[in-house]
Length: 133
Image (cartoon, rainbow, N blue to C red; front, top):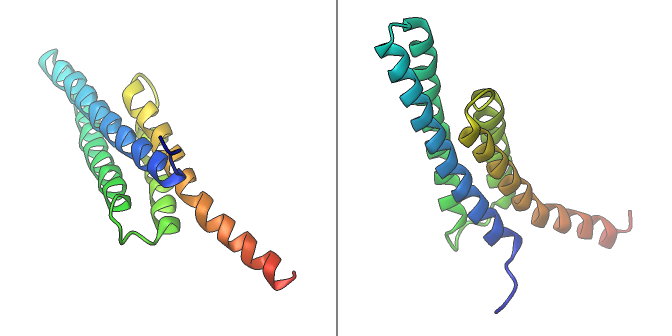
């Protein structure tokens, strides 16, 4: 068995992060529906709004992880930065509080983005060393 590359591990983390963010969206939707049934309209609006945002962010994380799976994906820097930004939005901003799946999904998306940045940083460092300065 050959060792996994940073891109393969990043893709796996990105897919896991996207699925967890979608799970966090489902959790937020369930809490919002419960709040609505109990008559707490303000809490329900907040939770349902978070649910929609988590669905969008989770779908985008899955999309970028899917893009990394293609042979023509020669822009790991762009994918890495996009996943890090989405992780900060999804996991940190929306996953704060009791929404543990969204927080963990954001951490996985952040790790995926960091793994995608390893290859471009190594190439840039090699180019700097090769040019002598």
